[in-house]
Length: 145
Image (cartoon, rainbow, N blue to C red; front, side, top):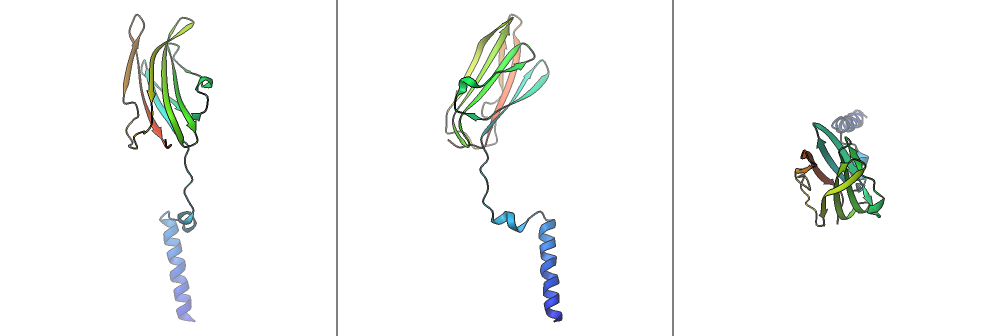
């Protein structure tokens, strides 16, 4: 009887040790859930940085642009569904009064790099009579072509 209790205590100790190490037994057997693709852009103008996120859509025309301090509009688009990414489109507009003028368009097609490096690298755009500078860098997380 003593040996059985010793073994039971040893087994319970192993379970407690594994749980404290952050390795739950049930989670190791479960299959991983695919993460949907997401484009994360860091857009900087006049010292302020905005994070703009884009998830896969079927119709790129329905994606709204994001106002960047009243001077620019930024529109990242991921065309696809779930993890599938067919293409990534990035538009930047210079706002001149009431009108937004397209100043930059970028298109990225698969295969996409699997490294943690940004998809776009650091981009510098200049517009207007004062040559105002908009900077952006975008990374694609998850997704597959």
